[in-house]
Length: 98
Image (cartoon, rainbow, N blue to C red; front, side, top):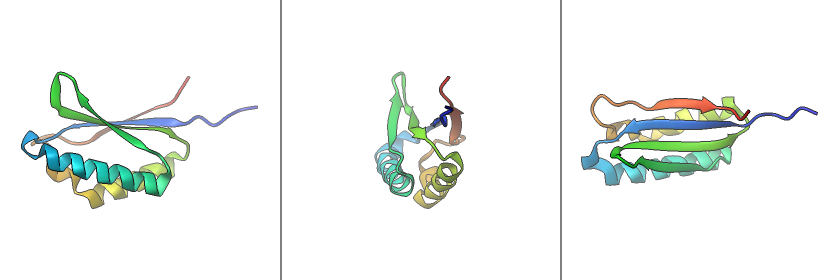
């Protein structure tokens, strides 16, 4: 029997630290919207040696096409791009288990 592999999404970017409080609220709302739309809960991490580098993690994504579409719409609606550091962008990497 074959089983479907669930993807994990890792999204990292740098935030403008002057807007970090606002950025956190925006990302938390974005993650709630993603959860509501897809059933996939996200986590938010901050780099240990660079607090301006953040990472969103979404694991156990079964339907990648639906998830990616929902995430893209949620990101656009959230306005999270306004909280990014100058020159930064959201970078998404997707991994599958062995």
